[in-house]
Image (tube, rainbow, N blue to C red; front, side, top):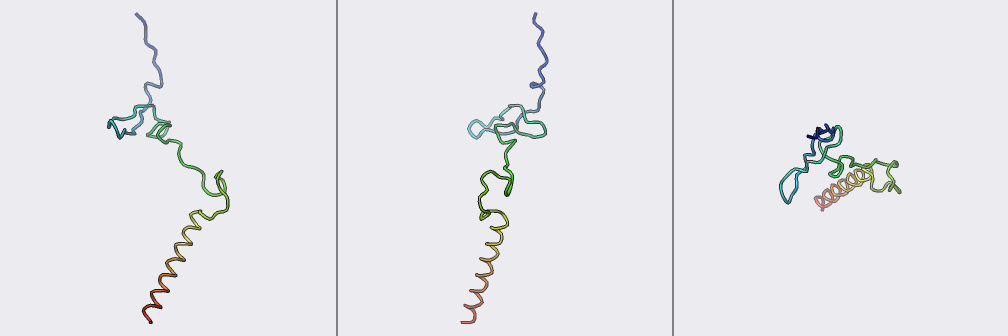
Length: 86
């Protein structure tokens, strides 16, 4: 009779991602400290700003987008004010 070895991967917590097709859970070993496996995005998330490899000029940074939105709101408010006066 062969004695089964205790594999630490068998005791690891399992991925909690669910399949859209079957509705069953992934059951792959979850990454340490996460609830999902590496295939379902445990290491997802790129660095922000100049640390990102695709950073070019900063036009689409969070700060630039927020300032453009604020400027657009200011322009809309000015147009409404002018329309109200006319």
